[in-house]
Length: 121
Image (cartoon, rainbow, N blue to C red; front, side, top):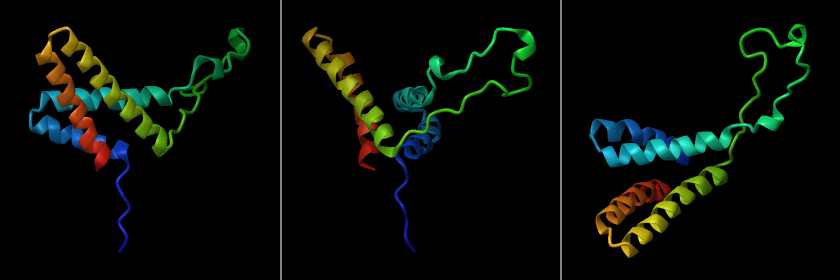
């Protein structure tokens, strides 16, 4: 019986309710933020939407008639986004250290550690 590894995005989604049950506010915040970044990356830019004619009689009719499918991200793209979120927190934490705000830097490093655990999984 082969068990395929759980995709990173699914690991993040699965971790969110567990963090909520554990009342881990930091993990909940970083998981929600990262999942939102992934979902934002799937959005289509406005230039791909066919505006067509502005005449009302030529407007699409019905629920979803003017919708465009979202982009589908590869596993590598999702990992790149998560690594970017992690790197951003580490970079900002260094800035807080330089500014003498070690408490805030530690918070950001703890957030980065939450993401790092899921990257390793």
